[in-house]
Amino acid sequence: MQNKLLAKKLVMTLVLLACITTGILGLTLPIHDNLDSIEYQEVLQTALTTSQVKTVQTKLKKWGYYTGVVDGIYGTKTKTAVRNFQKKNGLTADGIVGTKTAAALGMSLSKSSSSTQNSGDLYNLAKCIYAEARGEPYAGQVAVGAVILNRVKSSKFPNTIYGVIYQPYAFTCVSDGQINLEPNQTAYNAARDAMNGWDPSYGALYYYNPATAKSSWIWSRKILVTIGKHNFAI
Image 1 (tube, rainbow, N blue to C red):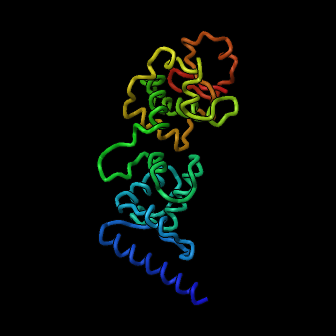
Image 2 (spheres, one colour):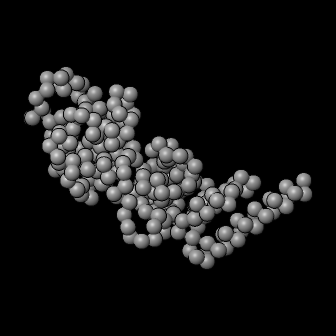
Image 3 (cartoon, helix red, strand yellow):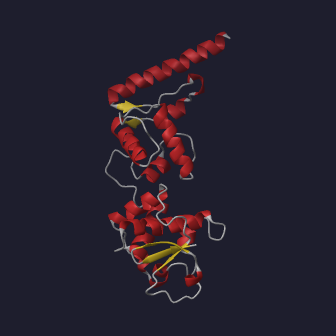
């Protein structure tokens, strides 16, 4: 019993020291309800600057995950919102804003101004959106990204963004080389919005331009919505 009490006091002391230290350095740490469950490594991993916490809160509030005040304090509400965001986006739901979660949020944990835009899935999705839908309404660009993500979730298609995009004959932009064009900021924004759950296509698995589509098969698909020049269908 005495050993458990001593261990608990030690953990509380470490947390208190961390809070004091991060307060001096302008950092904030998440607040935990159960101190017995805190691990020192978790405390280290969740140390974000006040500015970064505000960015997390602002983004999560915009997307409906967070309803609290944007105060830069990584408390219970913020951690719960992060966890729900992670579940929605296929990330490890630990409530910790690590590299992958930060990338999904469209932010960088680095103190430098280096961007996370060229990282994996986001970059590939933005490239395909730009190549396939640049010039389309913004909602139409997000919808193209959503179609790709809907395919990832479907058993009928490859289960990765890269696999879906580069599936043979799936996208014209891959065949004609336009997939290699560098995406603009709008395409990145559309890719992020699609990855964060916005689906203007209403679950579509296909899209096509009725003015140029030559396949009789694609015309047989049920149209869910039309945005700009594209029909979105299942």
